Amino acid sequence: NRYQVIFAKNGSDERTVRDRLAAVKGIEEVKAAKETEEGTFAFDLLGEGELDLRPTLFSLAVEQKYKLLELRRERVNLENVFMELTQE
Image (tube, rainbow, N blue to C red; front, side):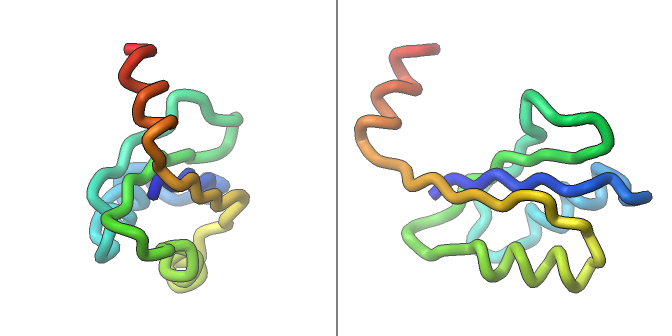
């Protein structure tokens, strides 16, 4: 599963947010998203297996008082993998 999370900057440090996301059990990879709106941090996450990490990511945002603007999950399937491989 892939996820995209977008937070309002709201005084938070991007590196700290990225490190906290990377520490979530089940997250394999955290990358800063290529395009972000002004005043936001956006991250693309890669999760292990089929476990839905959205509740965990939401809880992290609440606990850390991050202003969560968007949280999206994209299931990885063979068609998506093929599209990614052929575009690179």
